[in-house]
Amino acid sequence: MRQSKSQNIKLSFDGKNVRFSSEKDLEAYIEQNFNLIFPDLTLLARQYTILDRRCDLICCKKENSQAVVIELKNQEDRYVVTQLVRYHKSIIISKPFDTIIDYSLPIELVAISPSFHSDNYIDKEYSKLELQTYLYEFDIKYLNTRANFKILDR
Image (cartoon, rainbow, N blue to C red; front, top):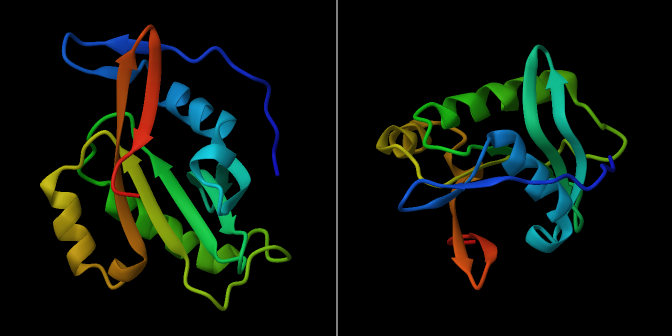
């Protein structure tokens, strides 16, 4: 697993919502708190390039070594499911971390974003990978001078 130094993660407030200042800040936060957010996963790599595609997080399940690809979005993106499908194909071809990941199991695709465009739900429904694709929204609440990150519906 790749280790990183603790980074100063920046948040911004748009008058209504607290957000990460950038997608890089979101990724750094997830990486720093990975074991708390995803206790059932092992993080293998961040910003990992496969066939000219850069995956935010490559992981595997601790219980069975099933591959999990996580795409992080700091704002709504109507093409995130299409992006995940392309990662899926690249991973099937390349089989990175083949000594760790069990490629006899389906690859799980996960998108995490503050919100999802309705096109993502249509793309997910009509993708043949629908059963292995998950869309989770996140929220940040600012309470008592502290920001609390939460993935909803997980």
